[in-house]
Image (cartoon, rainbow, N blue to C red; front, side):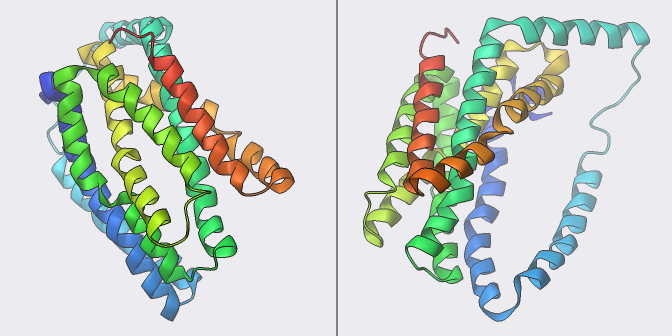
Length: 267
């Protein structure tokens, strides 16, 4: 809905949309870490149904009337043909692959960074919550800023250096000393961690037709899930054989590959 309403400022609109999630992602780990000091994790996990149902009702009310009118069968077949053409578009394939590689790196970080902080560095759940808060904090500012820059300068001008920078930062997690250094690295990772998802999504929607904006997002998610699916298993195996450091170097390699995919594109 946002992509169709703001076609000339697509990434900016998606970025501001993402700010809401980033604000909650920033404060929730710290709050959850504090709550886990008092309550068992099972109770905290079960309680999540309360805000989930509340937000579901809010979304249901907010989206009333967004989709109006009816569509004929011929319109449906036409949309299917558009989706088929999109799936064969080289720019879509490249962007979907780059997004998949980025998500692979991000999933490995989300899986093994908490293990590294708690089991290898010896932090409490509250300390872990603090570091995860740093992982999201700067995204509140960076999402609209990088979204605006990608609308102004182009998707590639933002994605390419961001992928390279994020790859370097993932590799710096291991040599960073616990405390200030590690906090600085994780905070800087937060500049790009969720922001780049909005920009790749906007890039895909640029390629897609107006009528299949949601379908293009769904198709990208399908490709991403197929690519990402075996990643935790592979990462877990390599960590078991070579150590926890392998996870972060693996994530770094995924981001450098994503940069290599984006480099030749004309977006």
